[in-house]
Structure formats: C-alpha cells, structure tokens
Amino acid sequence: MSDDSEIEWHREQIAKNRAVLEELQAGNMAGTDVFPETQSEVDRLKAQIEQSELIVAGHEKQHPEAGS
Image (cartoon, rainbow, N blue to C red; front, top):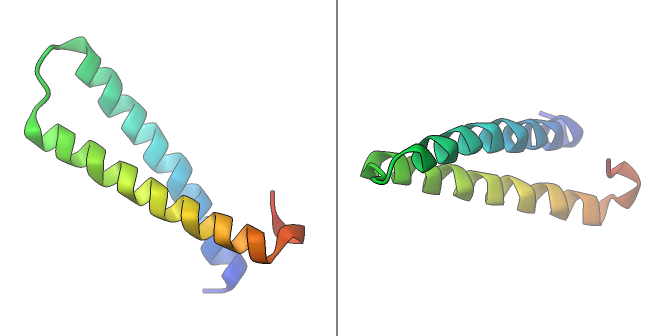
C-alpha cells in the first residue's frame, strides 16, 4: 500500500467510524440505560478515530503540500 493510499484509507475510516459512532450515540440518547457492549463499541470507535487522525496529521505535517 502506497503512502498516499494508506492515508486515504485512514481518512475513509475516520468518516466511516464517525458515522457509526454518531448512530450509536443517537441510539443511546433514546433511552436512559447504555448497554456495556454499546459503550465498549463507542470507546473502540473513538480510539480508532483518534489513531487514524494522528496518522493523517503526522503525514500532513511531513507532507504539507499533500494535505486536503
């Protein structure tokens, strides 16, 4: 996987994971109880988003001309 395609993959993952996270959080607001499995998935998605954001930010810092 080339550097650019890897960064694009991370950008796609950020968007996809944010959408799933938004759906989970919207579902949680409907009720008062949060299932432990749901909270675990929310935490996992947040960690994945953060990791991908760090990778993309590091790439953009090293290659400012490639930022989008």
